[in-house]
Image (tube, rainbow, N blue to C red; front, side, top):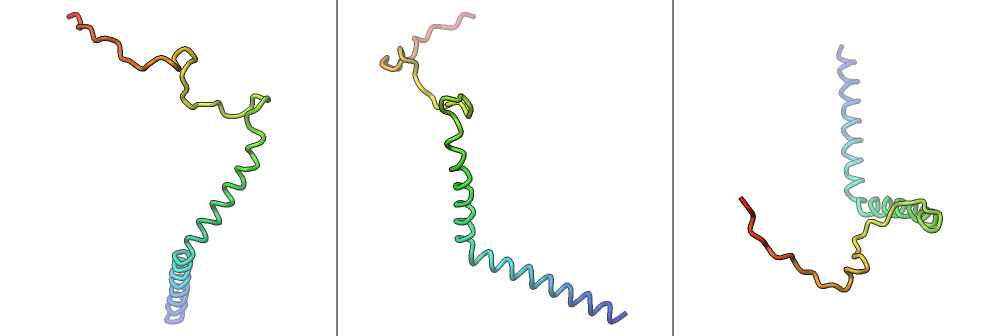
Length: 86
């Protein structure tokens, strides 16, 4: 029975050392890891840019707010406030 307990204790120690070691490695190299992941993500998006939109009509619609041509030069004013009928 003592041998089983010793094996479990050694296994538990090995797992604990692995977890602490991995955490220390990630903490020390977090900036390099973040930069690497960011470069890979932006690199994969760069290949999609040419295939979206354009004359084919495929892609995300332009959702940026824009004024209609007749509203572009008109000053922004609020309508007059009228009393609310009861």
